[in-house]
Image (cartoon, rainbow, N blue to C red; front, side, top):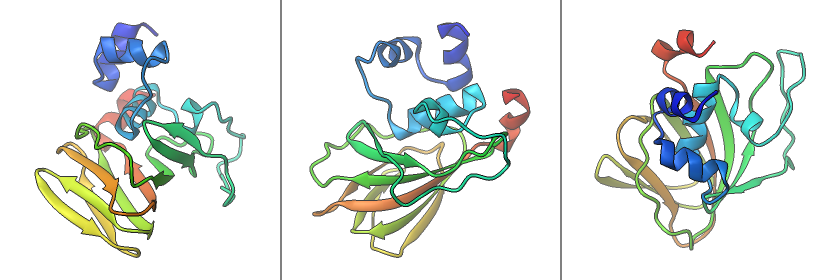
Length: 168
């Protein structure tokens, strides 16, 4: 696939894709989700994880985490043929600099496992405590950070159904 086609499918600029490809930059969660949708693969595949031929994936609590854009991320989804959702366990350190707000097609659902998550969504600020969940349209600007201490969360991203037929 050409860089131009990948940019067209993912909505990520050619220059940003080029910097990701050359390892000059680390992808954000939003970039990972956009690329997985563009390529029709689970996010874990972008981390080099392989999928079995079974339509079932079991994620262990000690799955290795990958560092990306100041976050520690473990994929916990992605059975063979999966194309509608990605589930990620994410650790957000309290000293992570605030990223540029993300926007990408689809929806996100976040469940806070530990800590206080600071969520900026469409210009409003929310603080989500352990046990809180939030569900939102990911096409509006959003970003998150840890308030005072490390945050552990489960993030489930659903790809837009209107684009699923184009992925395959």
